Image (cartoon, rainbow, N blue to C red; front, top):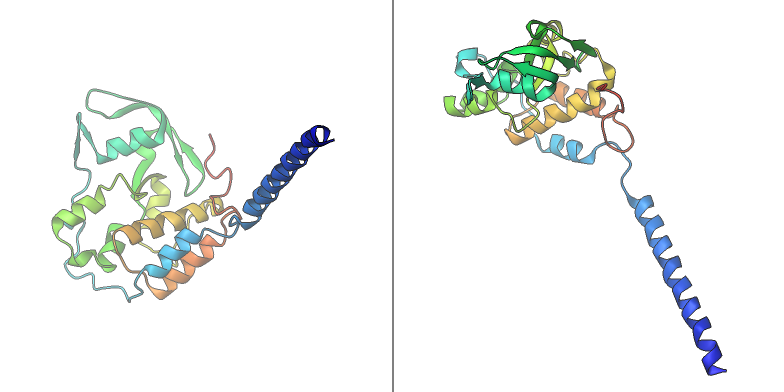
Length: 224
């Protein structure tokens, strides 16, 4: 009897282990956050809220940009190659073929003359948010930051429409991009320890509210 009962005990134990594994898996799925992106919201809440600083002393020259990145390429050239599709360049690193997606207005561009490289947080906005206290070297690093989502492709028309406005003053016409835009704006300001205004903060919170429940960007905002 003992010999016959042992296999049954092992089967029962194996079933119990399997059942516990399933229950734990279900618990993990239930507890996994499905709200809007907590990380971006947490970073936003850490940003100092201040009125904009004076523009006295500002000029774009205080933010040296499109600096040499080697191989005959400057920062703009690097972004064009990084964010484009099928990009071919000449010996001077200038595009001779390719196409670029402008997420602000949901457009594909095939002529690099129609393409701008936009500072997500505009230089003038950065100045008003604390960069006025930086050294010129710090401002140069900010204006050529290839590691954060500060430099992106945009159509010339949308870039001109945006100017140096903050999210409470201007939002991308492509509403499907609002989530990503807000997250990028927050990430840049958080890393560089820049401030936001109260209206700017409210606008960013509203835009984060458009994110998918998984906390990711809306699917399809950037077509392949």
